[in-house]
Length: 157
Ligand SMILES: O=P(O)(O)OC[C@H]1O[C@H](OP(=O)(O)OP(=O)(O)O)[C@H](O)[C@@H]1O
Ligand SMILES: O=c1[nH]c(=O)c2nc[nH]c2[nH]1
Ligand SMILES: [Mg+2]
Image (cartoon, rainbow, N blue to C red; front, side):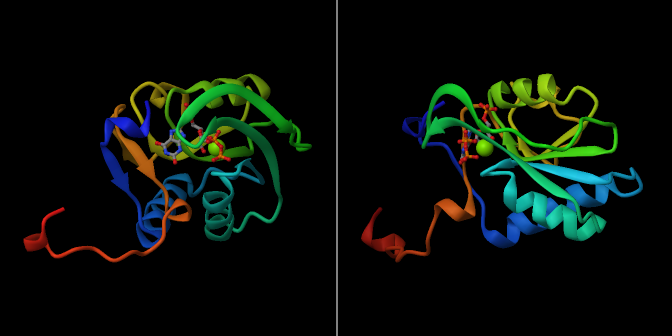
């Protein structure tokens, strides 16, 4: 989808932290010993989950597929060095079309893959997620926004 559809789901830092902590709670007791963060979007939730589950070993896989809201071909810019295993947790911020998730599933078939947000098309590819988002809605993540003045309603939008 593209930002032109105008349906937005705005996420504050607090909301993102709360949702990610909820994701960590769902993973309690599953004995993960390492995390691969899917950079860049997965870096923030990976740090929060690592803190909550006391996981000290983290690596990243650097994947790019979107130029802002325009999906392009998927490029792995840097691979992770950690070995695939059932104790490995792959963390991303969201799953949308599922293209990134598909590539991660192929790269790490044994690992668990989790995201904070999931849209319907990508949902079947994740093991755990916290919040459902409609397919035609763009998730505005806190690191992509800044505080700005908002006009009073009487002055019109
Ligand atoms: O399910 P998909 O349609 O593949 O989309 C999901 C991916 O898109 C975004 O990453 P992006 O490629 O924009 O890079 P970024 O994490 O550096 O922002 C997001 O962080 C996911 O990794
Ligand atoms: O910030 C983002 N919001 C989204 O909804 C999305 N989908 C893919 N990549 C995305 N990045
Ligand atoms: Mg990403």
